[in-house]
Image (cartoon, rainbow, N blue to C red):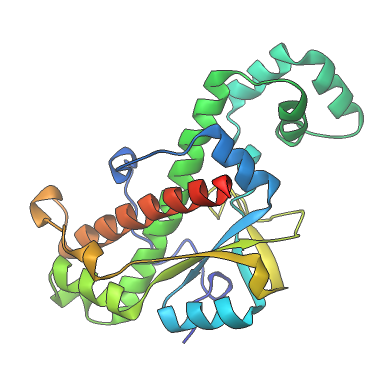
Length: 250
């Protein structure tokens, strides 16, 4: 059974954690990585099994959707909008004259003038948190799809998730207007569309080696289900960062 984003309510059956900093282990995204994601109109698609992902990667996607990770400027904080308005008055005036909001204008500003380092830092932080939330919620969904997760240890759940092959696909999309930003991690999602195999540019999944370093003592005060979800999310986030950096270099 395909558990696509379009077939479930994203606000249900989720595992939330208010702190996301300790999900990040290893190299971090840089602003240049975010520009690469934005300029290439990338999306991130979740699939429950490796078989589904392999089939889509080879045959393409029919009427599928994805989280619109290219929509980075929608995450712009209110205080950072004020900084942009103050530091780039001429460009903001020009953008507003053709109906752009500050966040919409920011991609054009970036091409002509460098933006404040603090604004960049906030965008990186908030984008990373959004990606982690997506991974974490997806893992909660996948764990529940196993059917008997509540009766197993975190290690057993992790082994099963890796065996079934939870996977994320990085895709290119020609959609211009993501929707439901508030529901989908501040980024929104692209509507259903056919995606050619050439536009599925990276597949992120885990293997048995990823389970070897699991130490339940690193996750105090969490039940077994949450330990598994947090550990797998950490692994997926690290692989996502590595994937974006690899794509950005090529």
